Structure formats: C-alpha cells, structure tokens
Image (tube, helix red, strand yellow):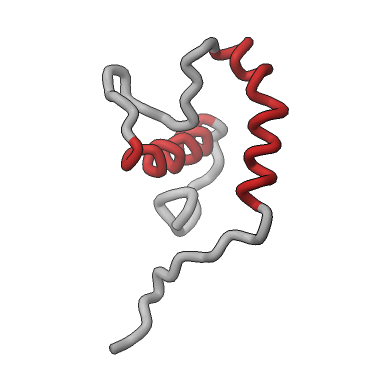
Length: 81
C-alpha cells in the first residue's frame, strides 16, 4: 500500500506554548477592538461555532483575507493546500 501524500506535519516543539503566550499578551487588545465575543475564524452570520468547524473557519479566514487583499490566486485553491 502506497504512503499517503497528505501527511500531517508535526508542529515544531514549543509552538503551542508560543501561540498561547501571544494570545495571552494580545487578547486584551483584541477584546477592546472586537468585544467579548472574539472568535478566530470566519463564520457565516447565524452559524454557531463548533469545535469541528474551528479549523475550517480558520482556513476560511485566511482565504477571505487573501481575497480581500486582492492577492493573485496561486495554483492551490486554499491557503493551506
């Protein structure tokens, strides 16, 4: 059986801790800008955020930001492909 070409990369050691530190340092600023209900992802109005949808919403945030910034489309259809 052939190996899958969609292997999941292992994050570098300490990445989660670095992200948590950045979040802790910056969340006060974002709460002042966005209010109490800060969600890291692009959700359609009326859609409830759920744990399985968080990754998809985060990817969509990147994709929507690229469209908004008029970044030319590359050979992939998503920011993480």
